[in-house]
Structure formats: C-alpha cells, structure tokens
Length: 86
Figure 1 (cartoon, rainbow, N blue to C red):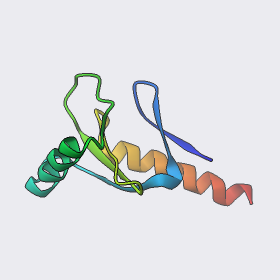
Figure 2: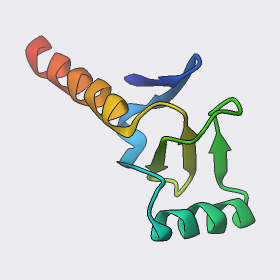
Figure 3: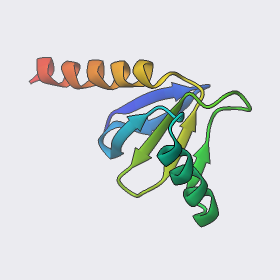
C-alpha cells in the first residue's frame, strides 16, 4: 500500500483517493459542508487555509493546506515509480 504525504506529516492511502480538487467553487464548498454535517470531514490543514480537498472512495473529505497540484504531482510520481518497479 502506497501513501501520499498531504502535509504536516499526514498521509493518505494512494489507492483510496478518488479526486483532488480546489476548494474555491460553490459545489465543493457545499460538498464540504454536507460532509461536515455527516461527520465525514478530516481536517489536516492545522489551522491554515484549505488549498486542496481530497475525496476518498469511502466518501470521506480530507482538507489539506497543500496545493491540489502539488498533491496530484506526488500521486503521479508515486504511480510512475510503481510502473518502473515491475
């Protein structure tokens, strides 16, 4: 199982990530609020501004202070490493 660093020493299982999005749009803000109401939000931003929203296959919503593009690059590099190992 591969893990991706999502900031401040926090990791998420790479195979559980469905999408990584920016928190700026209204639909994503509604999704975050709905997940908060349902108790499915994991906030790992350590009090900083949320810059990425990670949605998992278990419908948990993870809020990170790391840019979405940075997390996506880490996920891509992790997938590329798996291809070269085989």
